[in-house]
Amino acid sequence: MSKLKLFAFPFAGSSSLGYLKWKKYLSESIELMPVELAGRGSRMKNPFYKNFQEAVDDLYGQIQNDIQDEPYAFFGHSMGSVLAYELVHKIKQLGQREPTVIFMSGRRPPHINRREIFDSSFPEEQLKENLLELGGATKELFEDTQLAQTFIPILRADFELMETYVYEANREPLTAAIHVMTGIGDADVNRTDLKEWRNHTTNECTIAKFKGGHFYINDSFGIMIQQINRVLNSIQTA
Image 1: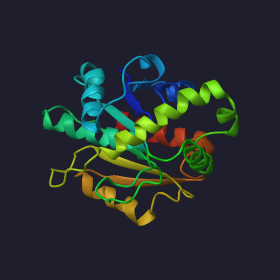
Image 2: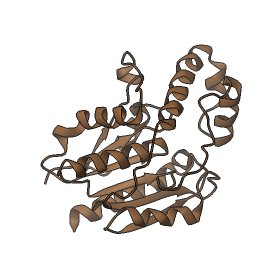
Image 3: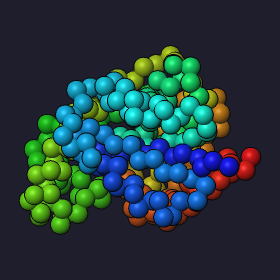
């Protein structure tokens, strides 16, 4: 039996490299497929996206040949969840097979519009302070001048990208199952809002909660990976 491909999309300020450590913990039946965004990692020389649709189109171009024949799944955290969501809508619009399941992590449903906790116009020190408070970076990162000079422009570009996102209402719901994942202490995600993800699929929608805040993916890494393995293994044995 062929492996189930799990495409993983980065959160703001990160790259696909952050997912590489997952490989040794995922079930052998799962093939991890980290997807890189422009302007970082192996695509450092590519210019940042001008708008959200450009990002979605670019991501589709990267994965289109890998989603044709076998079942697959998506994982996105925070900004990565929004990218994954819009990418599935593009796939649906093209009449192609949707992922079997989408892991929507650390993000409210796209139809719920609230002010973001970050703004691309924030001064650098405020960006750093907010990110440290969320647990998305360490003081050591910002103390390393060279790393900080690489990281901050990527972070700011991603916030600018999110500011171009416009939710399109009145589309048919997806047929992919949605598995919502959240940190219990994530102040940016309202528990009631999470239930609204069910309105975005005709399939099942489940919610899993983990210890930690917005970056529970670090605080509860082992348990989170176990949950992903359980969900994907159940699909393969169904």
